[in-house]
Length: 495
Image (cartoon, rainbow, N blue to C red):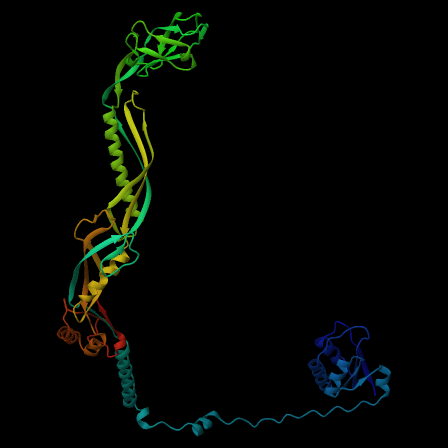
């Protein structure tokens, strides 16, 4: 029987092979797989090619040695051969007959189906009056549900309030470790370093040295040797007014030999003017072999009056610097302790002056005087938590029955704290806190749910002791009744 042989190539796919089959006009079509190239045709592709060959009235066969292709072809009933000559000599197995599709019976008319399946509605449901009644009932049901779940209400109550106050004696010391009911509270110690500087205008006249005193002294030899008196040899009075020789001088050898030397005061000012025979001291080793005196008064030292700061000005400025330094230390310590902590004022002390300077030095001319000081301060304070823990138990014991404490406790010392010689600070403390009447929220909800605003307000006011009228807000605003569901009602208690 005549056979069409089609050799496949590596680029062939389902579409290209199907086109090649369409051109075949023989009863048999043989697809030949290349020996060294790979053709990708899946089991589904072979099934499509088989059906296409059937539609052309031809039988499909394969020539391949690939085992996966042979298995797929055999599962579809496609004959497989090893060579093209074998395919032409061997007998091809008959393909399984194709199943015939049984046509579906014609569909029935849709109108007949509707009449058969659906029953006719009752007359009242098809009438206008029945439909209006059903719609009205549905709207009423929706409104009833909306009235049940949509409204929200808020009620604000201001129950009766009382101030509970107690006066408690307090003893605070760094030696106490814990708060005790007997009034002992730990005092904390804090240390800081403060610095300040102040300047004042000098308004006084002071006397300052102007010129140095100059005179003649006589050296007397106490030995038999010649002595060299160097320039700058220092001699002095018994009151330590000092002078220096201006020139190098030779003191002749021999006991009681003398020589006169010109001297000048080391410091300017009137203190250099000394009386006759006031200079008696020779500084240094020269004093062992010679003695000195002034045979005449030494003069020439003078002072002048200039603008400057007196010792009184310096004392006043120092006191002002100390006062300002104490104020700065007080402010720094208050800023470092916690808000509400109790600062013990009389425990603030200066522990050590670390640096103190004034400019210019005493005795110098200046229009201003500036003093700076840096010092370490220590102080004590009491933690707010310790005071509240101590006072809280006493206040709690004084709360009337049916009331509960609310808000912050106010702590106020009734007198200035006093720290004794043992380091214990004593004072009286007034502790005050507000107590509100207890409100049973569940009872309030049971009274007001489903009521109108006026009735709900009257019932609550009658059942509780309130400071003001209860405030009720309903959402939406045009709704006049409180919700029936308690979860939709918010009750807030305020002071």
